[in-house]
Image: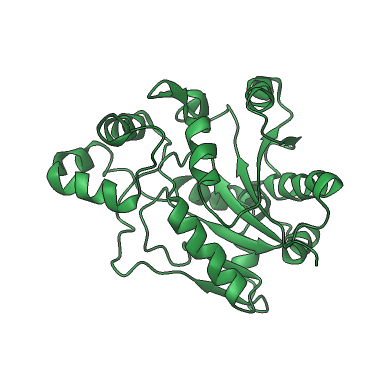
Length: 259
């Protein structure tokens, strides 16, 4: 019986307009990327975790980090992240055989919740879907985003997606395609107004406060733990609550017609 293989692919790069080098910033003595990988690996359903970075020389540090921690790493184009994901799948298949499902996570999510990852993957495995996420529409805090895509649909998107924004952000072409079978995991309470992602100095300050209060290796704190902390210390939410969600994608959309 062939083993069903689900690969978690974490996209990461050193370049960032608003917070350069954010993936190697320190959180409790380890880089942000280490925490993202560690938290993803606590999920029970993905079999493999890989970091997909770029061929830019500045991302040599990410490749070196992955080699040091024995994490598979693939390097591809900076702006064509969709093609980078497909290259990552081909890279993994040389060692592991066919990959059925791809779990997309970004390295600016050091608060990613392994239980949320498992719930999204479980929904994909239990239904007849091509794409399952918790972002369309979002009801979880920004920074707990998880998307699961079948291999065939990912490769089809790579063949057909033409807009730069579709290729830079991987899944918009898939999410807007009416033929693709998809569903969304919704949180019972809409928490999409909460900002738990890392893209600015204010975000880093907020996340550092969360880690400073809750981080207790080797245990992993979860979404409920963060919510309980924020209930005790509501002032923390004011640190970065003024920053709107999905600014990067909105910027890409505005540039589509100029490229």
